[in-house]
Image (cartoon, rainbow, N blue to C red):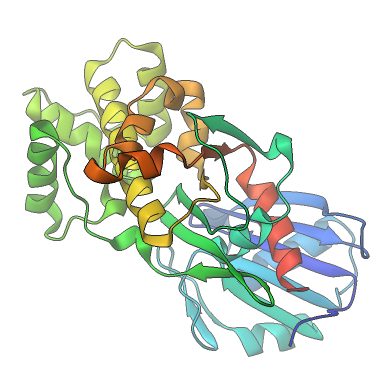
Amino acid sequence: MTAGAPYPRLVGDIGGTHARFGWVQDAGSGVAEVEAFLCDDQAGLDDVVSRYLSAHGLATPRSGAIGIAAPVGGDVVAMTNRDWTFSISDLQRRLGLGRLLVINDYAALAHALAGLQPDDARRVGGGEAVEPAPLALLGPGTGLGVSGLLIAPGGRVPVVGEGGHVSLSAGDEREDRVVAILRRRFGHVSAERALSGPGLVNLYAASCELGERPAEPLEPAEISARARLGGDACCRQAVELFFGFLGSVAGDLALTLGARGGVYIAGGIVAQLGDMIAGSTFRERFEAKGRYRPYLERIPTSVIVDASGLALRGADAALDA
């Protein structure tokens, strides 16, 4: 349906915190005029699109593709971690677009995996990709995005669900206690309750409770910064827990999808933590699946360097898919 979408194109990546846009003038030109806006400063999607086009002096695009942090299953889209709701058909009409594609943000990222360049990701641990084999993708940000890329007779097909809301399982006694604290607070403990910006705050609070000290009102970036400096034991423990849970959930996803082509980590939280993933238990926990350790040892894991830029490229690729 969307093959041959006309140029110029507007591409967008809408998360719970930032709305990013780019412009694709013609085939082969790449994504240009990239700008990010704080969602808290915008009234809604219409408003931020208009601000972007006006700020860059751009005419009405002929087509557009937007990846958004929300389930997309019909005309009306409601964001999970923000109170933005809109009709795709109404938005297309108001923007004057000949074609508008709205997909889950991790579907857009999955589309981009097929065109990854060597500088787009850095490896963590061993393994060797098998071609052609499924790829897996997960990313802790405002929430936890999860997707995959499967090989089909007609090409590569993104698979997107709500994997961020699977139940979180503990790998040792300390994690048992942490999950119990989260269960007391939330009832169901999803992976997103630990693997996201708010999740990092939850892990910090749980670490403080276990250490019998009061938790400070810290933001995720402050917890990350203190953990990197090493002086705050609870921040350091929160990050250790974060990477342990991340490795475990990533291993589960690799087994579920048979992702022998590789597992990719996106999201702003891992980027905030820099190279700490390399010295963490992430890879050990990824492989620690009992009889299936040899299977997982052969699967490479990588951190995407610029997920926002990749998401815009993926949105553009989705128009041609």
